[in-house]
Length: 174
Image (tube, rainbow, N blue to C red; front, side, top):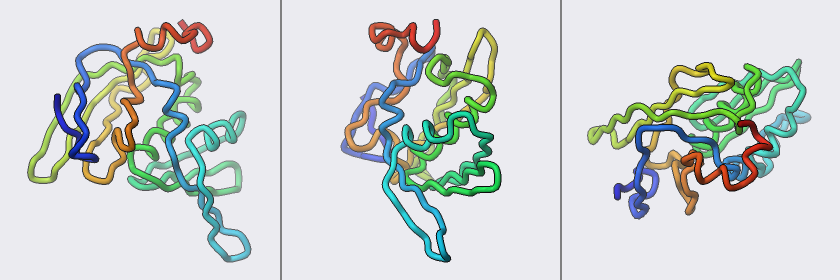
């Protein structure tokens, strides 16, 4: 068992070479929605699901900025803030959907890990496959203090496929 940098009291088995898929709990990750209205900045709690579902069928551009995601929908802009890991998950989901991928039907293959003690963090590298083709050559998730990686009792949002197959996998693809 190893610890996570985002929660030094938390232990987990780590990733192992092979395929993973997104767990449905990815949509429950908390975020904060920010908008500017009448010159005032408004904030409201939200989740990955609320933002992701609210943008279905829209022309979306997203940009991940460590602790935020800037989203442009037509002429409107929205900023979503939160733990870095949660923001990156939202950004990846939006980008995958823009590329014609159903994120819950994609396979994530873990292939590399780097660790640093100077700047305490672990980096986990995946490539993403959808419809028998690589749709992302490299997605790197970072675990560092304050990143939100596996915090608040969340199990990994990337789980071995056998854990998902028992939960009506056919609704999300093969």
